[in-house]
Each structure stands twice: as C-alpha cells, then as structure tokens.
Length: 317
Ligand SMILES: [Mg+2]
Image 1 (cartoon, helix red, strand yellow):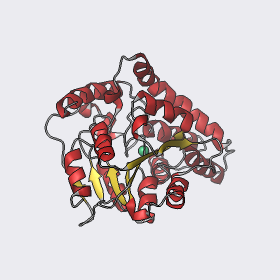
Image 2 (spheres, rainbow, N blue to C red; image 1 turned 90 degrees about the vertical axis):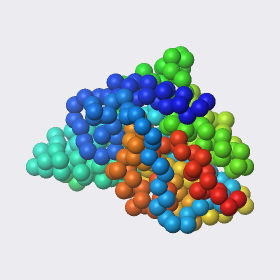
Image 3 (tube, rainbow, N blue to C red; image 1 turned 180 degrees about the vertical axis):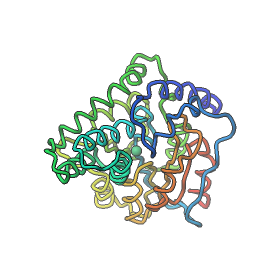
C-alpha cells in the first residue's frame, strides 16, 4: 500500500478516534492535545522529518528490533492517558487535601509518564501509595487497574469491534507507515520482538486484529497476572542471555520511558516515537522532550519516513 493510501485511511481513523474522545476533565500532557477540536481530522501537508538526536547514532550492527505496542504501532488504545490521569485526579481530589486539581494533575502525570511502558499495575501501585500518603484508604492496585480498564474499554470497544467485524481496516489503527517499517526490518534480516505493558491476553488479540503478529518471529509479549514474571527488562535480559545477541545489536522503538531506557541501558539504539495522536501527523512536543530526556537517539512523528529512517539506521550496512 502506498503512503497516500495510508494517509487517507489515517485521516478516517483520526476522525473515528477523535469522535470517541471522552469529554470531561482534560489534562495537559501526552494525548490530550490530540483531542483538541482544532486537530480533529489532521492537517494536510508533508509530515515533519525524522530528528537525529545523537550525532553519529546508527544501528548498523543491529540484529534484533524490539517494539513497544501501544502508541508505537497500535492506536487502538489511543487516548488511554486521558482516561487514566483524570480517574486518578478525581480520586485524589475527593480526599480534600487542599491540593488543587492542577497540582494533582502534574503529580499524576509525572508518575504515569515515568512508568509508561511498564505493566499497568505499576502505575496503579504508585497511585495507591499516593492515596495512602494522603490519609485515604487505598484499594488494592488491582482494583484500580480494573476500574481503569473498564473506563478505557468504553472508549475503545467500538474500535475493537470494528476491527473484528471488518468495518475498520488494520491500517486505520496503525501508526502511519508502521507496516512498511516492519517489512523493511524483516527484509534487513532482523529478528523482531513485540513487548507491551498491556495485559497479554488483550494485546495479543489486538496485534492479531492489526495483522502485525506475523512480523514478530522473536515473539509477542504482554503483561501477565504475575507481574513479576515479565517485563521489558526481563525480555532484554533474556535476549542477551539466551541468544548470542549483544546489547549494542538491539534497536528499540517506543513511545514510552521504559522501553527507551531499557534499550539504552544495554548499549542499544533507541528510536522515540513522539507521535501526536490520534492523527499521527506531527511531533508531540511533550513526548519528544521526555523521550530525548531518557536517551532516545532518534525522534520520529510516525513511520511515513521509513526510507529515511532505515537509511539513518543502517546506512553503512
Ligand atoms: Mg507505548
């Protein structure tokens, strides 16, 4: 499929995604800007180019590519931040500590971002600690997670059902250019791994609906009930210990703190996906700053520039 075709579909998807936005509390930060009315439907014109953050960065020796799922490839859960953050702020506001909604929003955004890419339960554990610290009687973090997933489901249910029934195409809920990039990486001979902080039972189904599972010959991994038994860190360590791949032979793609950090910690190359959802046409400055802060070597607004990105990553190969 050509870029123009993807472009057209993406715009349709943008309207669809924006149309299901939950009204009510809004928060600055990732995802929120995307739901502002002036951005509904996306903007015309060429997508901005990839940004090389670290001069000389490349992935010429890469043998493995590690992908995050939500916000990096999949848009099915787009807008999750606008569900999680207001839910937490609402509960903290009810504790009447005298802190303003704005103060609580900043507090929540900070840890939600820092734990993005990690299993959802960690965000709920940190949230529960904040409730307790303020004299509240915190629920079990699993209860908060269920509450969040219930709220998120009302937002994304239509998307999943449309994909299942064939009323939506996978391309409508993929970050633009994602499939072309995956195909190029396969053609380059890399082994691909998909790892998500979303529950495995959901994300495996979503990867199947988006028709991307087949690219991941290294495996598709998500959060397990026993949250200590899987993490992106564990996966990276497993790749290093169970294969002959070395850290600098890993290239990671992600929109969250955790996957970028884990890849950088072992000496790999990291591509930060700072896409402004839901239209995915431009850079989200909030995400960009934070991804650079944690060590991203490249920043992309989407994968429509896959040719340029491949050239930058593998030029001398
Ligand atoms: Mg993500």
